[in-house]
Length: 190
Ligand code: AMP
Image 1 (tube, protein in one colour):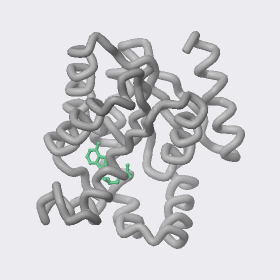
Image 2 (tube, protein in one colour):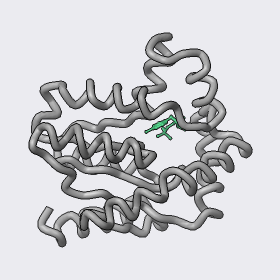
Image 3 (tube, rainbow, N blue to C red):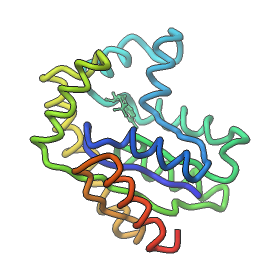
Image 4 (cartoon, rainbow, N blue to C red):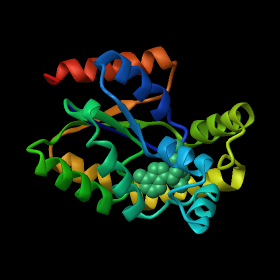
């Protein structure tokens, strides 16, 4: 089963998707994690790409599509995986449809986590203090929100048209939100 988690920065995609992969026993494929690991190993990204990531901007479609294409060839992804933070642009979404299509697969479900901008910004500022993430300053938080609205929000229509979009209210406790995710998964034969 191939699943995507979509949603604005700070909505809890990382937390919820990690819970769902434990539940479904499929690999967690986070392009953000893969990029951070590549940077800490000092390979795979040009200096310009690393800088644009620190500034809260998207790295190139080509780079993330290459990373994902390689990753899902690993044996643990034969039965499926959960994509967290990918796709983030229409180009990436179409590339993913193509990669899966070549294997005779398609996405089963796209979970769209939703929350109010006020709460999301507050959550990210808390996370910045706890995790000390280089891309969680007030300015980059605002920029990442704008990029989400401009580049990633249009993916909703792409997946709605495919009939696989599940919209989840992501406000409330982590347990509440996870219960909604599971309910949606069960409710639709997933
Ligand atoms: P995340 O951990 O998913 O919030 O990703 C952190 C940062 O990595 C983003 O702000 C982007 O700079 C970069 N990134 C992660 N995934 C993607 C993607 N699918 N496309 C472009 N850039 C990405």
